[in-house]
Image (cartoon, rainbow, N blue to C red):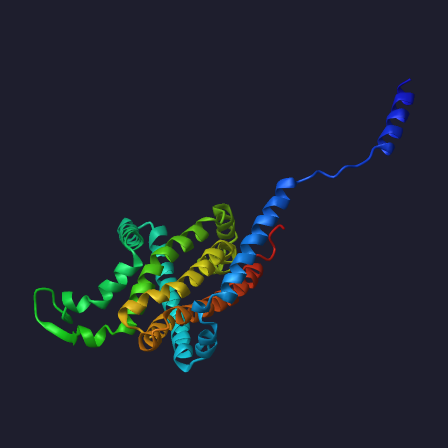
Length: 287
């Protein structure tokens, strides 16, 4: 009897008509998005205030390209300062020395707790606080002295402001990456007689980089956009170059669009590079 029931059930299953699950609200969302996209495209094409001919005229302007180049090398230098400083801060945070841990913690607390824009302004106006920078004996004679305005130029202020701020974030990123490595692997390596430098190079860093690279790449992209803040220091990066041009011809919106397109292009390239770097350091992990 059981066999007959199973046979009948099998026949019923074979004759069942498969009905796909309907998603009416999905089509509604498609329609809403299509309408919004059509409205946006229509606005971009018909609104003469965008000034697309002006955008095309200045897109490859020598002043814009020089500003773009300045933005790129400022990003690279600020990230270099941030990464080196971040590694030092991470080592201090992981140290058994309470003084080093305290100094690192205080640094990270201060620079993460104050806006980077305020820090840039501070470095830009540091000569109001210290007209002269000197080295010498505390409460004694000066050995060497410098004019602050000659030493802390807009370029130096931009690199210091962005790099020192980035160092606080990179310190936490590097520390998290190192602490993500299982301590048992380090102990096993020590039991095998491996040197600390070899353990760091062959065991800790390859695994820590899988944790470090994604946020570091995101910070690099964020740094590229943060360079626009140094326009307040009259540093001729991409945004400030666009500002100088539209202060002459009063075509504000087209020049801002020109700068924005360049930012989008460069961040897109960095995003693609981030994908390949993450895939490289992610080798050997489970899919």
